[in-house]
Image 1 (spheres, rainbow, N blue to C red):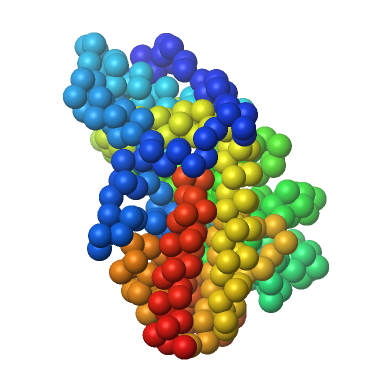
Image 2 (cartoon, rainbow, N blue to C red):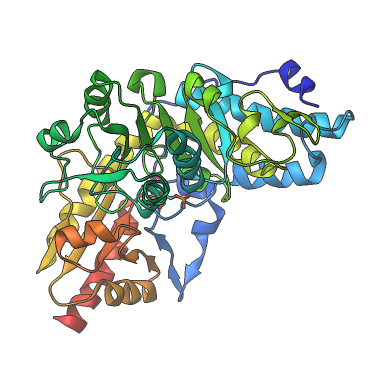
Length: 426
Ligand code: PLP
């Protein structure tokens, strides 16, 4: 059943990146059909990229091509169509391997997204290892997806969740982290970049500190993978999770990277077709990695679309993307700070292109609604980080999150909208 997989022609991610100067940053938005629309007769300024990103034509066309010409179930059919579908699906795995610089393709598991990846690690890695009194360490900045799975597994095992405190600017307190690491700590699970504040966590340092005590580390890379280059071997993280839809790929697909030695000894997360090598009513033998963790028909088109998204990102170059987004971050930060009474929540020294803010005079939801009438889409709310909001003593923030396809013009539109907010709320 899985024998054809090992003979697939590999299509690794070969870097074709342009130089920074070669990319026309003002016109890359042309690659994204959705961005060309008008909202309330105004040009759309899409500034909610941390929630989900828009899709380039190359991704949309790849998915259409897959369904038009190659659609069949993978790993099962001994006929041309199924082999093509399998080849496309497995080629995407190789692209992800190259994208993360993983050592082996078996370390790349396709899942539904970051949320499922973390739940998989919680149930399949942590649960069998945890005993009453053991500890899992997370930070104050986590998305609910990197809090609740650990609360569930703690309730199942009698382990405790410990939280690393942060400073008022939104940086991890490393001294407190050092003190929290103990012989009871079984896992550290932290965001690579905070979705609500934009803080880039000092993950390299934090991994080294944890490993000194033999503690494995999971990085929630949902916000990092689209914005900064990730090298799981250089980081030496034990698990890395990210979602396709935030990196210009389709929804419903994501990736769990895990070190081979850990994945190999973990029991399956779900049972079903494809994750087995042999089944009888008496006993079942599980499939090899990574298929042991991919029960049932996978999101084939999703994986294929993710592969196209990674090719697209690679054509621009993640290093260039980071640089462009830092320019936009600086431009937008300066512009927003000119608004009277506006306070930025999250002023870490190292930040990705996310700006959370509050205004004395207007609730974030009012800000977002007024901006919407100007064609400017931003997010308002707790950003699935309620404990973080509590830390800052606020119920919500307004959040601008920028992608490389945004421009200074989008930020000018944001500022026009902010003038309306000021006019209405003072
Ligand atoms: N972690 C972080 C930091 C996020 O920003 C998000 C989504 O916003 C998630 C996890 C969950 O991602 P998904 O909903 O794609 O599973």
